[in-house]
Length: 234
Image 1 (cartoon, one colour):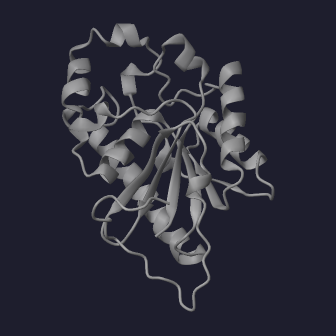
Image 2 (image 1 turned 180 degrees about the horizontal axis):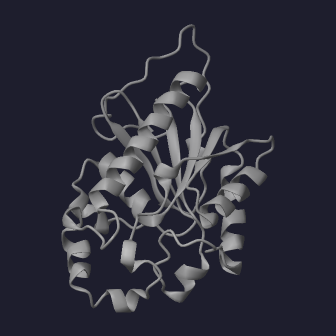
């Protein structure tokens, strides 16, 4: 199957001010975030991407545009609403320090699979629609563009954490143990049996993700097996 690069949007004005932006319109990257997005685009630029898919919210669109702008050849940006931020309902737009006093905050921290935001979305539903989107895009691109395809999905912190939890094979209640920084890159390779998390919260060089082109008479079948002993790496 293909490999998805999960890119969290760069630092936004809401991140800097400690506000839960949610799906509020008009939340843009701040000055530091704009620089982060450009740098992330440069890091991804050497990789042969076949698609850039993004959440519809402005901060993700801005980040996706920086990724696309850094490409040596043009690439279209496609929007998938299933990659949007969690629906935080009545929590949207409130300061995190105030939300931390709410009884639901402890549920979100310790038992997120049981958390539904007032007038909003449950974290279970958020994970389900995001994982579905990533897996569907990945299977489609692998079929259309080949099993070595690389593609980018630009989304939000909690969304990416939930997708990574699924790929790690861990319960959603453990997703708060996962850290996903602004403008970070995580990568998952999906296979018929299992996903492999090959990068996580990465801020460094990504060249190791480039497909290894080797001359063969026949294409080697995609393997779902993990290397016993750890393998030799890429």
